[in-house]
Length: 190
Image 1: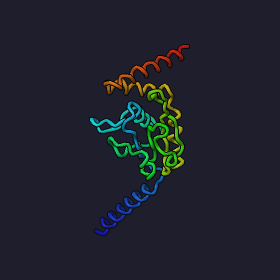
Image 2: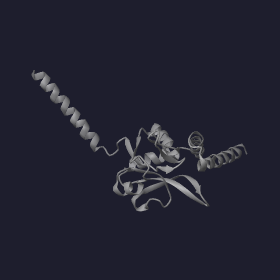
Image 3: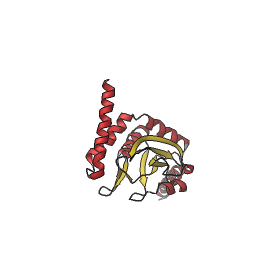
Image 4: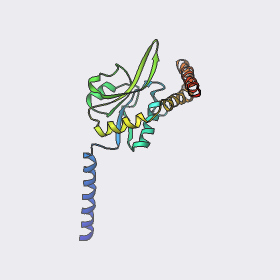
């Protein structure tokens, strides 16, 4: 009886110690992301599958394979809460935001990922880190993101344009991205 009580005490102590250690670990493997719910095909929230889709979630999967980090989107749905999330320190990464759409005072180390044309204007799409992101996390993610080529990013964009929404305004993306891909291929051949 004393042995089983001692065994239970040791088991509970080790479980509590491991839970406190993981709570204190600033380099946790789960990275919280504030996504852009309406930037198709770069990043968007799909209500039928109840998840974020697009180039950025695919890029996070590639980064996850390289680094071991797991990316978890917060505030899923049709409300873009990126600035409030950055201000309140609720996520480490603010994802797929066009220049000027999130106050830069809440962001650090912005990284341009791609650019899109909106009317006559071309906008740079970035990811950035908030104040709660550790320097190690920033370095790891930046290095992994920089290892993804522009050609890979373009392929991911095209795959989402072709496989998902084919209605109205999104059909235009197919033509634009196909033209860019052809230019890339022509430049590679030359």
